[in-house]
Image (cartoon, rainbow, N blue to C red; front, side, top):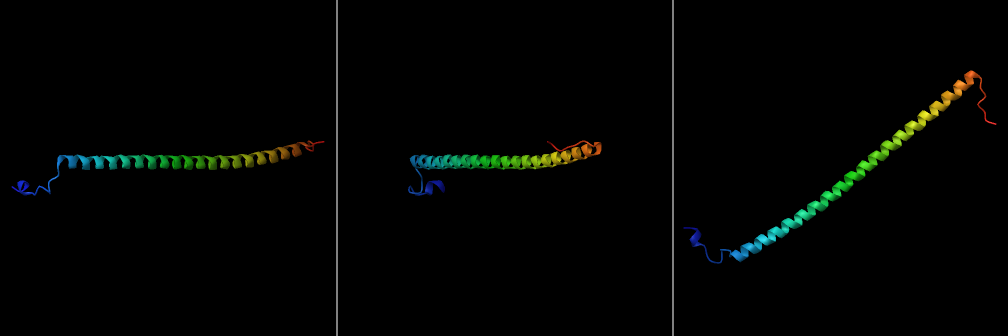
Length: 90
């Protein structure tokens, strides 16, 4: 029997096993806390990227609308010129 042939110094007592399990549990808890913190950081980064994308989209739409307004003003001026209306303000 190999198990019974082990030296007493090789065998771990129940107290030692419980102590090692406690250490492992503590390490797992620390790993879990670290993972939660990293996940929160990734979520914040994702939100920032989302906000930056929304800002870029809004700026792009604003530029497009400004160009459209400019074009409409030019078309209005041309229509008034065709109708012979005086567009100068007094």
